[in-house]
Image (cartoon, rainbow, N blue to C red; front, side, top):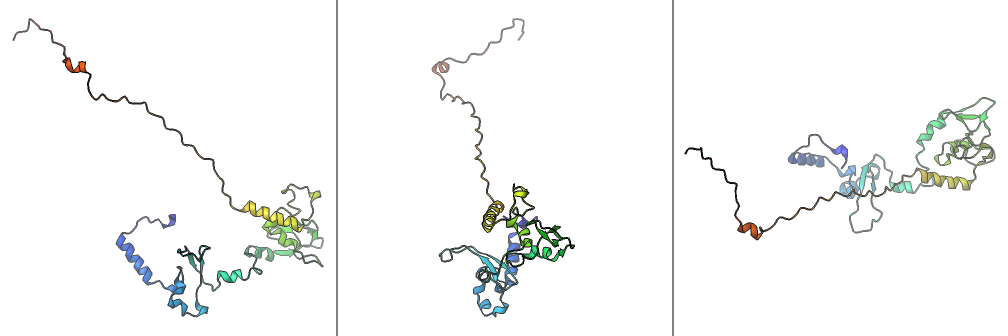
Length: 242
């Protein structure tokens, strides 16, 4: 159970039912917070421009007769998961973190500086990173500029500045080919993906075995039954007067 659900002073059963009753009376299927809300007549007769879609993730087997488990999260946009899947050629992920780097790019002086990616002279610098690099591709080519390579997580370790991190000498470094970049991208994805580390099984410590307790006799021996128990006799004192 989620720790945030814990209440220091929980209410009683009747108050809890009353709270839920008021909550459901104020709920409308147009909020689309639960699976199946979009099937209500109140939602189907609503104009498409005013419909609020919900991001529902269910199990892959939708044709199974069993009820699928779904999690609905209400959003304020009309975009659905199908719209994103139909525009995969255009969308390249969340690039919001790159905006500040693009805005901080400024030209250098006339002498220029050495690019940290390709090792050649360039005339732009990313103030957010504090490094110099080519912002635009070379003339006559359509290759990705060094600015994109430098801020690409999958390219980290292939630039000339990162040669020491990859175990390569600077004088032996060369700009990577497309095949090397693809192989390096797969290695980076394997490095950054979460892993499950299997721990060795813990053998429980054996408990000490208590010493055996001798069983109690069910009956006394015959000699003990026949012989009466004799107590010590008190010696007679002749000087004692009755």
